[in-house]
Image 1 (cartoon, rainbow, N blue to C red):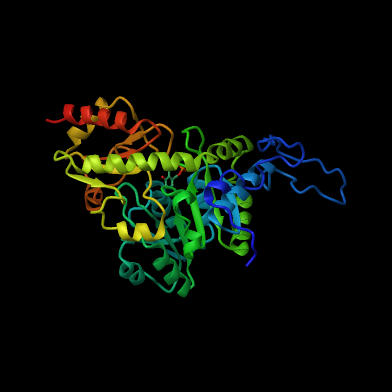
Image 2: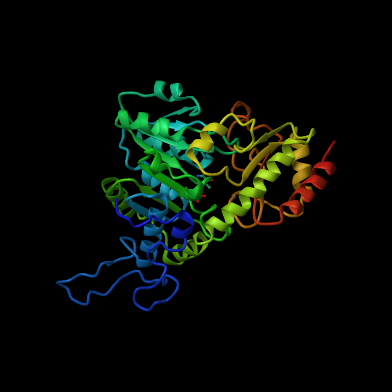
Length: 387
Ligand SMILES: *Cc1c(COP(=O)(O)O)cnc(C)c1O
């Protein structure tokens, strides 16, 4: 053991390696807005020669997320879906993957309408049931893909249990860590091979940039992902890389503030007779609470709740004044979504019902507003939407 104390995440968010420019001392990573790089000496090619293959601003971001997740290598992509689709290109025709049944809608679409054409086969299972995951294995299974908490009903998967089983069976384990971020959950420390993010959400945090990130636990997997990122060309540009770095510096402060508010909001909603169900892993009656407490240091800033009917949900959406009514989550402003008409509109109604995505379900991503103002606003909207 070295006697150098490892920094806490709050410190790593500020001191991540390239926070000061080595050439000038500038207190921010420069934006290298260049597609190509001059060879000063043809016998000694530059470190970066073309920005699809490598760009110093993107590199700073990639090293940053690797530090935060505790992985060997980070990679930055143009969107969360670019990170996810590039990662699935680790698989080949004829391979099989086990995926959580309430996976993000875009990932579901990728697997069921695009990758299926390449003979990549998927089995969707309820990942809260380890036995169901084990039962889904086939001779051609290559990977297991988790998302926890899931969206929008916030079910919790036991990351360590599944990653350990995956390792024993020679499978690559992957976690979409968008909802928790490394601030609350670091899957690589629990044995996972690859962590993915839609950095468009909490990591960026300001509803102003689309981006995706991947972190590989090992150098080998990192090299494979790097090869795919360059080969497919799914990279993040220099400007957006810089914007994301800027957003990520305040991740800790934003998450901590929003989470305290989310806990209050969930408790308040839970106490109301006219709100039939509330989904938040921090509530004592949440079935995944124990696992969540074991594998994460917080419960996050997303609260889902059912107001009883589609009619009431729509009235409420037209009545709220503070949150923006929109797709997406994880920003400084609160975002209220209506999954049945937004993120999960393409899912057949029966499948939605089965997965608990009822017609009265709303998803509240808590921002940085004063929580009493948010609750007062929601209270007037709830009262005005009673039929
Ligand atoms: C938004 C989201 C994605 C997709 O990310 P984009 O940046 O929109 O491509 C993937 N997974 C989760 C959990 C998300 O919320």
